Image (cartoon, rainbow, N blue to C red; front, side):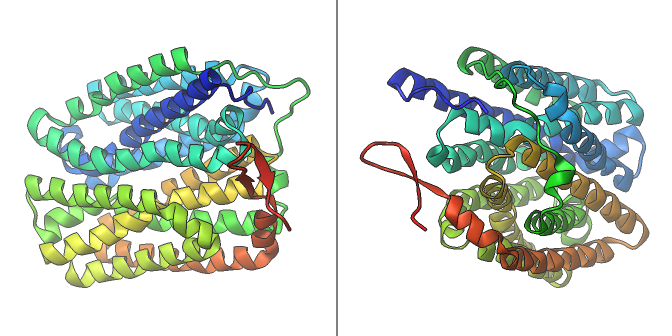
Length: 415
């Protein structure tokens, strides 16, 4: 893998500017991918489909992200990663345009498939791209910045989508991400250096990685986590409208609470991960499981729901930072293959969680959906503990580099 150039002042500015461009692209992707959550009701009404079927927009994007993540590394081959990322940004722009103009559910789902391809390609390459841009000891900071775009989208996308949907309609709410994606394209085109693959560099085997017990256990834990999260989160708006009985303004406020809490959680999670990566990865789904059950009992109270959703947002949005940190430290020499595997697992889990949640929501109501979400999250906590006990924790500690503040260079932690 091509390493970043020498750390001159100009080079350093260009590298971190490129990282910020990736963060903006992450913002657009997350805002686009999960915009249906805050607009589920008007989308369903306008396209004449059920809310459960409208929620499958999340599943469709997840399915295509999964397929893309499995093949993006061999397809990219020796191509300049900058060019690949620019083409993925073009897909973001095209997706927003198609969804906004969709005359029916079929075209709407095609637009969602396009954003799925962009999601799968971008996140599969994100960790490896960051590794090409910055030195090893700065990688956690770079990943945090990229995931900061994710967190910021979580703050703004849902409440802003709900707010704009009520004022200008869900179609224009979707189209609002198109100009932002265009800015991300220009920024990456100007600010990102060429990132050609080194000669002889070959993509790793995704199936080969799964033969490692610690990797298999960790991926299972992350899969259960994202299934449990999106089985509930995808159908949060109908729950709030029918059980908490909130109007558009309060709905936007509650979604904003989730987003703000998520941004705070993403900012703070680094300190907890440094003190105990696996402990944090186990506690987060356990807290979310308790929150899901509590919503069944206290969802009729706006005040109680606001507090519970703040807890959900605080830990749920921060969790991906933990799992990407685990992946980067567990598979430092197979970053693209590991990233592809991680995205495949996450997107398959989102697809299965959203699909199962929608079926349960339509057939049995929100109680069945929330109960299954809680059970999956409890299993995720158990598998996170099993991953730690598999020996992955000791290997991560040995490979974790630190920055020498005197020289500015990386060094390994002493054994």
